[in-house]
Length: 239
Length: 311
Image (cartoon, rainbow over all chains, first blue to last red; front, side):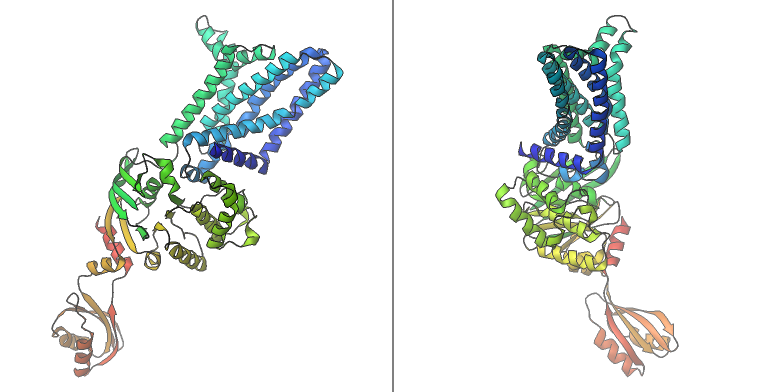
């Protein structure tokens, strides 16, 4: 547990020591804030603003996550510091979990800035608190799934750019797979739509916590982290 | 302290290490010698737990590295080749991170890190500098400090002096020698003086195979087929040769070089015999003037070249 915390701490310090974390934060808040403004003036109904907004943030996070996860292992492999981690008396699982929660914590910090919009909504209107809470829970699960995929792909290459592009493509596939599904008949359509990150996220923003969606995201997270641990243990991708 | 048994390591289809076995006793400093791509780094990486062997067994302090990697790693301090570091971290927090990973308690952490820093000779004013602002020599020290965190009993140093200037090399060697008093150390190098300067024992590997394990003195003795003396004498070489070859025990006389009237001559005699007195007196008696006479010993370079070429 302590080892995981040490890695989380190191990762967070590392993010804020480089400009990437600030650039991503800037885009996250600037674009997010702009769309919040649009929704407020388009919808003009405090109760309906947050579902729209969180749906958009889910999309924005998909574009931004690769910038955060691409360096997680690619950089360590390129500089050789992975050798230091793997020869320290810690397990591979601890390394993966430390990296995972480090990146997640960074996104939680980003997300916490959007609570400011909630305050505005509550001052000027009567938004429904239920869907907001479930929406945030869904958003965090969605983001966690993004990060888990990003970690796995970051393990596969020394090159940060390649790692980032692979992650972007993978996440894009999981976003649009539901639309692609519409071109197929059953049962292909059902399968592809089941894999869509978007479809599972929608219910959360409507105020519904359905265990099947929660299990979907937890499965994606667990599967990717498990593969990452195995990949790291096999040393296949290190030299 | 370290046992390597029949270590084999493949990368895909290429054999990097081919059945190496050796022991390192507690408190020894062992030099790992070999040409580039001989398998030095791979062997050290396997011992440190970074790579898994294809076959064979490695134990450190009685613990099997494959079976209980976490416990084995607490016993090992490892400095990889080219000294990778988190360059954007300050020296002190960098070491703090590894102290955390080694489970050092908060109360002792600061004291321990300060101790290690003073041991490797990093001054107080540099403690909060970012590592990427440090010179190569200091980075090497930070890497060494990282290996020392947690007081591991075994140190594995992969080419610890590569890329340093001559002064820094001497300093790091001195430091390693000092660390050898309370650590078991394996260091790899392809600089032969380093082995003479620092190590108790030498392990020479070539193309993944062990070619020699011994003390430096023994290796040198074994390699010498006969005693060689080099001398410079003035006079006609053929006549000098006639005199020398008659000495009991002399096997061969060769002219190495000739300048004006001075001949540089190599006299090869039977193994283990010191012929210098005889040579000197015969030359003088023969009416030639002896200008120089010295025993020639094989250098470690020659031993190394022979051992690694044979294979």
